[in-house]
Image 1 (cartoon, rainbow, N blue to C red):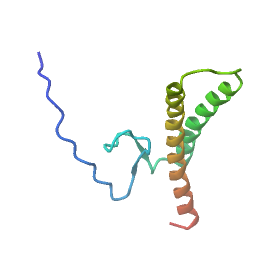
Image 2 (cartoon, helix red, strand yellow):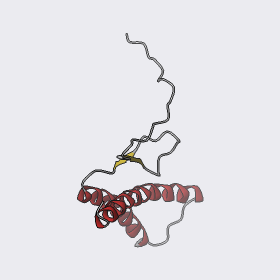
Image 3 (cartoon, one colour):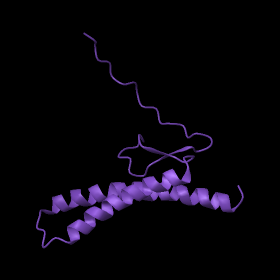
Length: 108
């Protein structure tokens, strides 16, 4: 039977010189685990942002079409967080797209 070994101590990642991978804002700790590949094709980045933003939009539109919704405040807080995470991810990816497009227009 294999013995379980603890993970080595965390070492904060050193930013890559060309900033290829950008940590998402929605990482839940100081140890980022989710990143955006800033060198991915623009259409792929746009699709990723679009997917996340539209998913939350669909949920919120469906919710708004319902009658009254009664629930505890902690449930609303959890629901807001559930919506905020993919929205923030989508915005982070759109920030990358914007920087890339500005770089193209300036001839960089």
